[in-house]
View 1 (cartoon, rainbow, N blue to C red):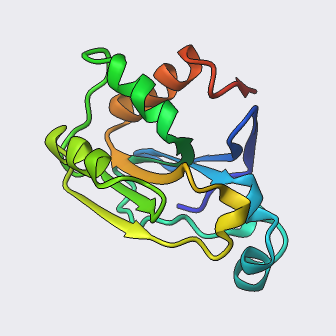
View 2: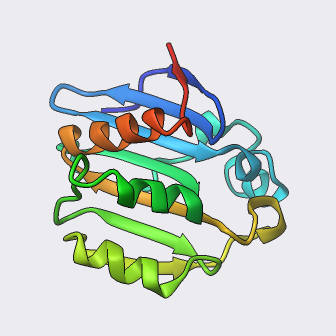
Length: 157
């Protein structure tokens, strides 16, 4: 059930780590600044690939973890109804993200939203948001597709 070493390049956001088991795909996008920070190295070591998947998952879903600015979230809003979020998704933001956007995400059917404070906020930026989403493969691939369309993600195999 472990992650197989498939590493894809990512243009703006960070590292993307993908692995497959017999029933699902686990996909995690890690923030590059955090992956190279002192806090990360003390917790996980210096290699971002060794960082644990942030989800306790039964291998039935696809997971994604990435950073967005508030402008990116506005672009995602404008993309409706091309994108929809299913119940069971979990979005976590640090303190730089507004409560209005929490409300918006909750109204889109997400199960829960909570705030976290990054260890090194100056490395991430006050207008950025770290989001973790858990959902079915089709839903997450839609999110990736929208991000590619607005030019925020460039995935190369």
